[in-house]
Image 1 (cartoon, rainbow, N blue to C red):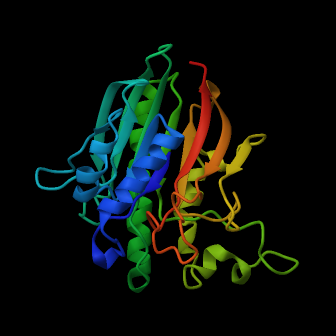
Image 2: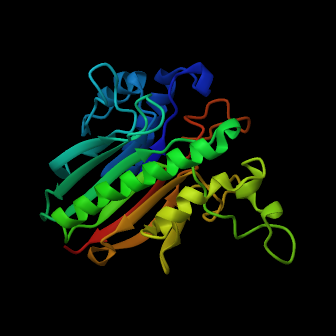
Image 3: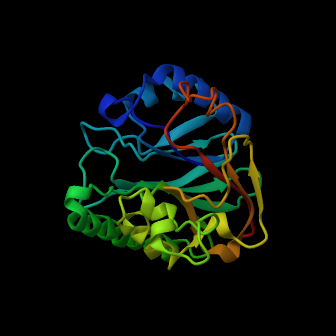
Length: 283
């Protein structure tokens, strides 16, 4: 699973965490993911979420001596054994605990098969500094690639799943208006004030790794009555590499009432919806 749970900081739009953490914990117990890449995992989330999840532990909790890691990973200790973990902070970008890559190498207790999961949260475009922010995001992608390449060499036969809020959308391909594609009818551009800031980082990443949302032949599932489609453009993605050692079975957008309880969304857990993949591993 990959989920941006939204910090409690009012300027970021975060409401009190305690009730949101209770509802998210219930969702985790229901769906029972093996590993969750968390974004915006602030001190309040650590305080209120983890005590409710007795089967889960966090790795790489600290970003620095004084700051928590807001791009952490939690995993189910009843299913997985942690082999190795680490955190790589990006050299450029916001210094708020978000801009890092956390990774964990896990071995399944039942059969010894291994997977690697990363969690990251790239910088974002602030329109007044468009070119500067674009340069920062692309430099973060390069540093992200460096870590993944190191893991691929060290664990050559292990699939890697890269969860995160990439602050970068894929192009909208399903419902743009008009007979031909044009940036003016692309939701990616519409949401980004007419500039292609919604897709440049995504396009760089998907040029090297696979977006699990668009793997051919998989089943796509939605606990969904609110009009979302699997190919809606989103900021959140789960990429994969070493794909010859794993098979994606399903891609899920979790839009159930755990996440949108009321029509006006006043009790939402976050401003993001979790995404999940179900996979088999053959290493």
